[in-house]
Length: 443
Image (tube, one colour):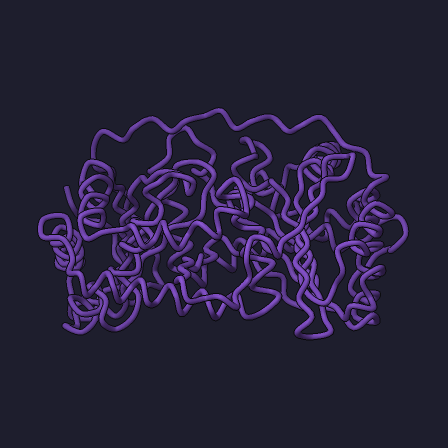
């Protein structure tokens, strides 16, 4: 079974028109909070005889400090390796015997565990999760085994992914203070140095019930979910709230550059990273649409100007969900005939054209239609519903903001797109990373 590390997990923007009368509404979502602070959200959907449980833990690499970087991702491994009632390898075996499956992912901001199962197996799932939340076995031999797995994952990931190799260096230059400066998988020296006490304290603090949100969706009943939650999750004691992340990244005052040499690179890669506000900021929707206008589909600005004209083999953008101000990434891979300087100039030209001349009403309308289609695709499954509801609950302060998204996207104008491009996609606000096989010879 694959565990998914979604350091670059993409977020599908949501847009809902007034004609979606049959879609999920805010009234369909019921919630309650246990005495220990754990919030449970329930979305009843009897379209299929299955259900899922998403557990969103409010912990990611932003909660780490130098010396324990990567520890959040490490727990994504450890949480499957045995607890008091269900020992090593028993979590997966028990779930599979009950007809279920699971996965997990870690980001800069959250760690999320997902379970899919037949409805009649729901109590088993609650029992499994409660056991590893309350009684995870942080065994020294298992820790050392998984430590080796994670170090190998880090090495292999950097070797196989030009994006990850370049992004790790760019983040380290773009951020001088905030913990977003390191990758989710962490520094190798830290991975090698975690102690058992580090792990025990981290699990106690961040896997406390008052630091989690659970979303149940599918063929379930609110009262039964509440009964099982009170039975299995209710007895787990709350802990003192985790320390707040107080560091605010200082404003960037000029372009920064980093060069990365990697022998296996066939053609140069270039990455721009611009500082942008947190996801909860009012400019999120315009920035999300700007990202799509730049890179979504064959009619996008980057594809037409760079891939179609054989300047780049590919070009893309990415803006992660984030609790704190983060980065808006633009990346391109050079065509074999394109020198890296020409690749950079072409990328800048596309971005500056939007800043100077804006976008057309047709481009904006196309993106709004794409958002609507993506919404239907995601919200037609119980899995998509659970993930989306939980995502909005954490990143937008309340799941109710999901149902305000239609209005928020509808309000975005061509003027807003140009404004955010001018505000954030500026030379003085960007970090430029170049990845190439040859040594940088600039003097």
